[in-house]
Image (cartoon, rainbow, N blue to C red):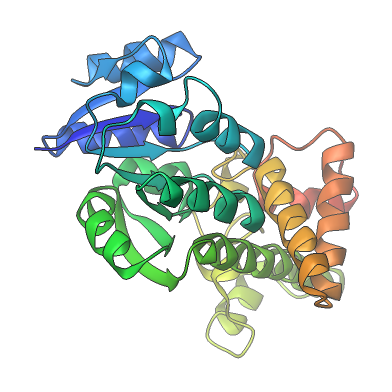
Length: 296
């Protein structure tokens, strides 16, 4: 059994923390939302009144936070993790943030003698609940080896992406591709429909042909062909359009820093920004189908 401090018990963090509790670890959590703490305690965890208390006895610290500025605050500011955690603890940040901040915080941790990995996730709330997330891990080989047994409780696929920050690189590149492919899949279904092709027929053909992709076969944005997809539940979110936009913006910031042309990524970002401005950022990201249909 490990002593684990868990900071950030939101839609993703809470089920991840619960899975650690269910695996027999002692988990002390902190979040500003009291109901999240109550739910963790009900699952067998403990709650803390502040960050320092949550990590004081921790052998492992896991953070799941909204943005880079929150990660900086939680790790670097007075009362934060680096000033409170015990010597030798391993730090795992599973937030999806910009690469520069991930590397900055990791460097600060290293200077204080702590091993730290960035380990953003893919798989959404469903994956967090089921313990089937994919983790993309940046950091040293030693840090990855230490983190893996904990990550394996919360996920099914654990990949070492390389040096510090490379977990974030893998995440934003993956989600840029996902955003692009979702829009392309929507457009293909809509064009086929306009030209008189039944959606199920198109799915049956394209899902076994060269147009096959995850956005079609696992998360189809057209109602009908994939019963479990959000399209068949009024586009209720598994992964919101707002979260997709956040990741796309990160991809474009990174592309500028790297002087890399990503015209399709830029266009996908603009379209999800348009969806957000239409007031539909809380829909599932596959709900961009509605915008392309002119229904938003």
